[in-house]
Length: 507
Length: 107
Image (tube, rainbow over the protein chains, first blue to last red):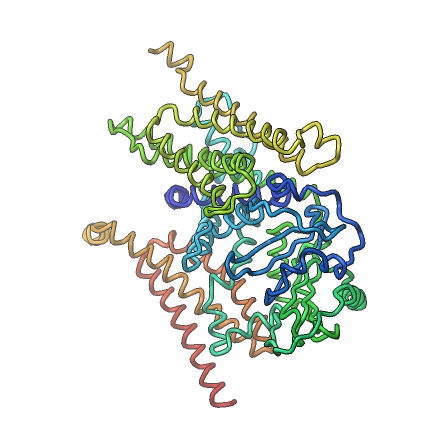
């Protein structure tokens, strides 16, 4: 069991750390969006909206020719109206509208949290044949195996719970930290890994769906999720009142015993007589990410289909909701964040402990440690943090309107991966000093990001705290905390590098 | 007698590891899919809608695969490991074939 734990940890540690790190950040992806897209820093949205009025403004020309578009209603965390549609040249486009005036907010061209960090978490941005999904799935299953084998290997659970000796030798402290974060947060780690796998269980075990839907696989989303489609008629007809449909939807759900507001509308074939509007029910008051949907005729507003979440699908959606944390509960969100960072500490300390033990073993055997392994460990831990901070700093430094390719979003992503590669190169080039120097660089980048936010947007910490912009203030405060932690860690490692009392006395 | 048997099986630790990995990762997966697909088919026989059964099977596959993976790395005898995984897969496939025949014959 211990060997399984070491091998699985070494092979999957880097990937798992990236998943836990971006996952923890994704808990606040909307807040990161506000920080990285200053044009969307609006006050809380009005309680009542008129979609018909708002969409007749500037947005009308954008969506005039799109075959389908999605409208996401504003919330406290995302105070803008979001319009998603497919552009034949640019691909998927997202634009933000002011919910009071319907004015199109300037397109800042940044993927920010919701379109870079969050998808990185579940797909690693590896699209080729869903490779990213499978890697994350393998890592998730590996995490469950690591937890099981870790518990078996460290059976003296209660003793480990109360043991953290930070002043001892680094190896001992690392192992203590590893066991502490493992035991303390064990139920969270288990639940988050299992629920994460449950989200994509149909992708991971396609054989089950294939066995029950041998010829008509496309029927499954229709039956389980209420997916609706009908072909365009070719006859032009104006779209009916969306506000009336929303009112009808709210009434329907109230009658059903599941009162709730809509959070998203999807319009198919707008401007055609066969247009239809799908309205989805919000889940900010429940854990389960329900798939309750109402389909209305786009022209007449008549109800075409009502889908209620079936029971077993509901179980899968409950597990999904446990993982996504889309419900409105700030205490839980922060607790999840602590758990996620605990997971990062767990994996990082495990990797470091393994690297240190390997280094000691090689020193005893008289072999020189492989630089690549050491460098990879540094890159996997500190390099990941540096890459994220480079992403934030690039966002503040790059000009908004870059017309020619590569566009701003691509440049920001290149900054992320470029910084990660540079971290690996630096660690390979200067192995002895890599940790300390990179931790100090991370601290510097975090401080730079806070400074740049104040300089480029004017929402420095004092202003954001006093004007109630909690998202911006929170982001700046977290960056400052990160800088502090990196400096502390750098100091601790510097102390570990110096010979101890005992060694000095003997030597 | 014991010593000679140990010499035989201890001779190729790399080959044994490779066989074990294949059994654990590949064999465990195939066995899981075979058994859960069969369970899902049985659920539909008991009246559960097809879409629900697919979700039920896919969800149950997760703890089943985990259990098979853990057991694959703990079971000391490779022969028993392969026997059980192949047996499970075979049983699942056989039951599904029987269900197909029954459906074709009855429906």
